[in-house]
Image (tube, rainbow, N blue to C red; front, side, top):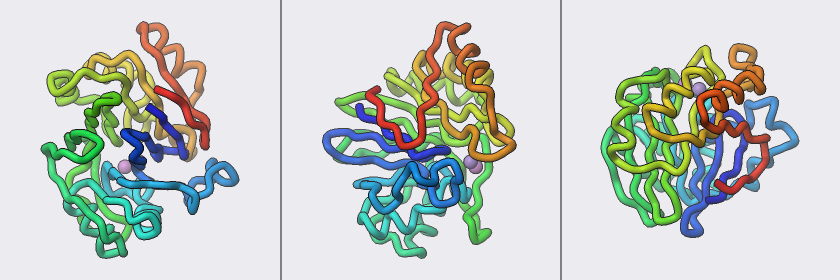
Amino acid sequence: MKFTYFGHSCFSVEIKGKKILFDPFISGNELAKGKVEIDAIQADYILVSHGHADHVADLAAIAKRTGAKVIGAYEVVSWAQKNGAENIHPMNFGSASFEFGKVWFLPASHSSSMPDGSYGGNPGGFLVKSDEGTFYYSGDTCVMMDMKLVPMYAKLDFAIMPVGGNFAMDAADAVMAADFIACNRVVGVHFDTFGYIKIDHEWAKKKFSDAGKELILPMIGESITL
Ligand code: NI
Ligand code: MN
């Protein structure tokens, strides 16, 4: 599966020729400047974990330009619609099937409000199961017992989880989470963007390798095959 990193917690995957974008936040990311061209990002679907600005800042603009279907909590999707997204699929915790595969919207232990201060519903993460691979994106969260349910839904090929600490898991926490979700291959996100979440990459990778796991810290603008 092709995975492209746009910085912070924004990435896309390609399944069955469909481009699925997650948590679009590029314009406000200093680290992405000159590395990502927002208007060149393609999307057939946009999956949004929660309402915080560092996950939705470019949501409405990309949704409007691409016509991508916006999937996420009812409140987040309604906000996107109010801001011009026409193609929407609201969810709450549960699952739904799409042309690329099955999506579970699962709880995250975090908070969620929209940039205009309106209620953002419950924060969550996504489990995506497809013929071309299965992965879990936790969204912003601490480690939590609910993660132990993930391998009961599906066997993962890889996971995407925060490793920047402060607002969500750091790398040591993410190793615990990786055990809970029974996955040894993790792509780290939500790191380095702001002062609070700057990390030592070598320390983070060692936490994983000491536990017999792999941590991938992608470069902004880079595509990798997972
Ligand atoms: Ni957040
Ligand atoms: Mn965040």
